Length: 276
Image 1 (tube, rainbow, N blue to C red):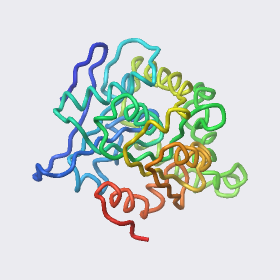
Image 2: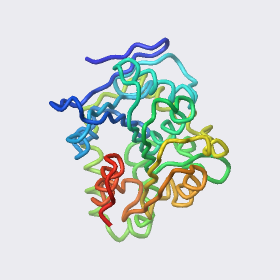
Image 3: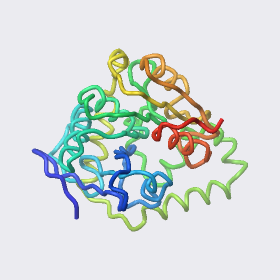
Image 4: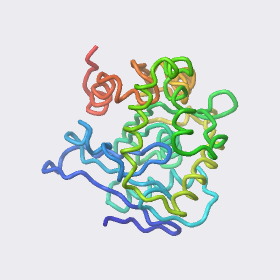
């Protein structure tokens, strides 16, 4: 099992198997509660065919062990840099999703020499008016109760009224979500790690530091996302000089809802033109 030992953590990671040793290096940073045992994941996406792909379980989650919290966003950013050093990567393309996009911002600010290009997907810069939904306030909700509560936050088209009118679709979505994690054990460590992640997340605020991000940046998200709202993505674009922004037909899971999103992310990372 590939493990990167750190001072207070042992990071579990995976790398794609590619015969092309010249393929560009891409570090993927997952969102809240990310666990590489959940499938499908980034290694099942089209990106895995085009890059040397590196992904990992963040501290306290999945198969990564970590010292007792609290954790800080700076630590999460430093973890990403330390993992790159462990696998011998001086620099890479970086793709951060949701909470992973917040971590990617800290990585780009604290270790700019390691970031070639940056994709920030469905994420936020933090701060009083541009923070993602405060998930730490609903940490007590679990299972189906949490799923139902957050459904309309992940995609505001799935309102309480829509859920009442479409019970079978709601049930199908819940069953799919439940099936993804049914074989993954919940331990005391991962429960504590999930809580520590949310506690760190609530303090994320780099709004005033965004002008210091120098890497070319593609900011993207869903038009119907109430977790990381379109206005939060617009704040990222205003702050990062070398950035461009696109919205897609979807919510927080827009890359699964609109195939144009992954096509455009791939084009940006490869330095080619967008399809439209």
